[in-house]
Image 1 (cartoon, one colour):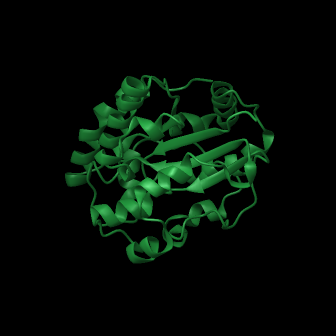
Image 2 (cartoon, helix red, strand yellow; image 1 turned 45 degrees about the vertical axis):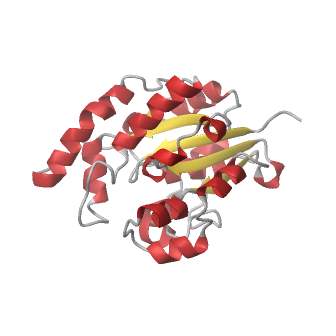
Length: 245
């Protein structure tokens, strides 16, 4: 049997990563998993995230055991496995070539001004590390330099202007056929959603497809502006390598 394709989609929060998970889950050949390292990261970092105790109780918090699962048999024997990851969930001690080399990596980026504004709708404070931009750049450099992959980079704003074109280009890079089912899905929660879905996924639960492209970036002030400004050069570095339909 051919080796299954394990897609590790690395995103920061408040991006289209959950909608992208819906798109891949709508493929009959694809299994999905929602932020499998979240529980381990919460336990190891001590971060006071919403629903922290519920998430830790519901998940495997041994990161080595988690990555053994992620590189093991695919659920239901599917040939494709979409693994939705947050870049801030991978701590330095997790950066090992052994398991990361077994995954096919994709990076999902978004203008940090949009990310910061959206993040502050859910949280009272924000830092560059909260939205995962420094971690995303470091992980990208590791994947390229240590593993030798050239991972596709998808800018979510440009993606939303042409979802089908970007999905076709992404599927081509991943060497899998494009499936029209990726463009729309039934509304509502899924069994695959993480236990944190009630706090974060309201808009996704209402959706039946990808939303419209974003408007102009919001005007930020104070700490929010400082965080977005500090992340912008790292975002631009990845943006220069973005996938184009």
